[in-house]
Image (tube, rainbow, N blue to C red):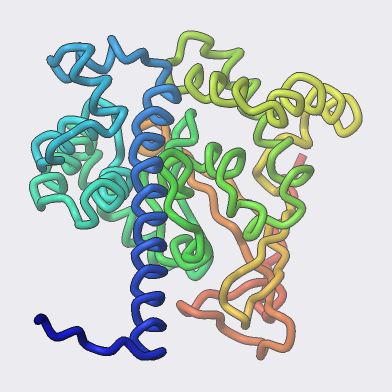
Length: 328
C-alpha cells in the first residue's frame, strides 16, 4: 500500500503561496503580452501606416505581419526586431525599449552602428555636432537640440537628469520627440508644472504654425493624427489654442524668453522656475536645428556662487556689463 505523507497547515500555506505567485506571474504575462501588441500597433498608427504598408516595408505577407502585431510569433529573433525597428522608424532609444518589451534584453551592438549612419553626411557637420555636444555638456542647465518636428537630435547630462524619472514609452520619450512627450507622455505633468496652460497650449500653438507652413511634412502630419486620436488634445488644438492666442497674443507662443516651472528630481532644485532660451547658429541653422536651454533659478537655500559645472547666473552674483546704445 503506498505511503501517504501527512499534509499539515504549513504545507497548505506553502501551496497557497505557490498558487498565488503562479497567478501573479500569469497576470504579469498577460499584461506583457498586451503591451507587446500595443507597442507595434501604436507606433504604426502614429506613422499613419496600415498593416499592408508595414508588410510591404518588411517584405512579408500582410497575414504574416498581422500575426506579428497579434503576438502570434514563435520566436522574436534579433533579425525580426531590428527589421521592425527600421520599418517603424524607431530611434535608438525606442529600439532599446522595443527589445526590452519583447525579449527583456538589449539589442545587439550593430544597432548603434546603424544609428551612427543617421548623422549628417557632411563631415564638417558631423564634426561640428560632436564639438557642439561637448559645448552643451559644459552647461549646467538642461539643454537640447530639436528640428522643426521637435525631434530631439542631442541632449546634455543636465537634460537627462531632469527627465530621469520618466518611464519608458514607445513614442513620447523626452529625448526622442519633445512635443510628443509634452502632449502624450503620462509622466510629463510630473516634471512640467502647470502642464496644460504653460506647456501644452503654447507648444500646440507652435505646432499649428509649423503645420500650416509645411502641411505635407510627414512627421508633422503624424503628430496631427495622434492629436486627433486624443479627444482632450484635439479639443485643445481646435478650440483652446485659438482662444489662448486671442487672449495672450501670438508672441506668447514664442519659447525664447518664456518663463516656466519644472519639478526637478534633485531635492536641491525641487520646484524651480526656469527661463527658456532658444538659439541657433549658422551651422545649426543649415542642419535645421535649434538649441533650447532651460535656465534654472537658484534653488531655495542654495549658496550664492557658482552652480554645478562652474556656470553663473544673475541670481548668483554674476556681473552684467552695461552695453552702450549705438550713437545716432
